[in-house]
Image (cartoon, rainbow, N blue to C red; front, side, top):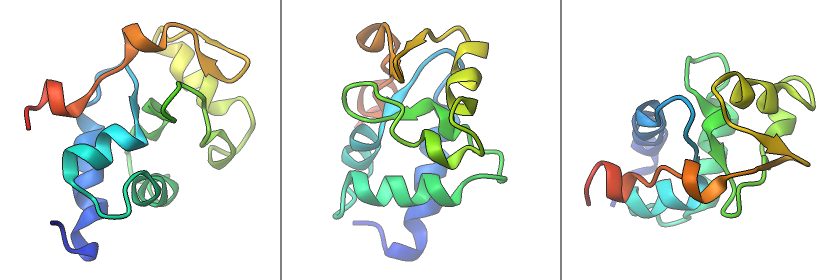
Length: 110
């Protein structure tokens, strides 16, 4: 189990691994890191990540909705960042979510 002081750093390490054109979820990161407060802790880390070179726009909720879009300085910034990488978004949701999903437990190993 990660200590609280280390979990932001570990979340950021995982998010930096998500390739352009792919997305992951708060829950997938939490499961991979065995975070006790789960997806909520990942969300806190993503909120604090802006301005630190973390590709937070690649982290969406469990069904592909851009739930963190309000933290990007404008209602369409997160969508634009994803679309710039080739990810289609419609009505604040990744269109081909299952195809675009990058699961750290699979990609990085357990």
